[in-house]
Length: 79
Image (cartoon, rainbow, N blue to C red; front, side):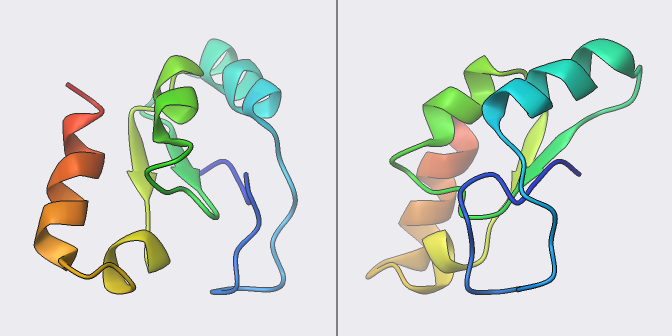
C-alpha cells in the first residue's frame, strides 16, 4: 500500500505520501500497488493515472448517501 495520499481520519499513524510517491513505487515493483488514505471520488482519477492497481477506501463509501453506488463508481474508475 502507498499512503496516506490525501490524509485520513481513519488512521493517524500513517506515513504521508504523494501521487509522485505512488508513481515511484509502481515503477519499482512488480506486484499490484494499492493507494490508501483519503481516496475518494474527487481524486480517484489521479490515483488511477498515477498507476494504482486498486484503492482502499472507508469514508468515501461509508459516508456516502448510497454506499453501494459510491463503491461502484470508485471501482469503475479502474476500468
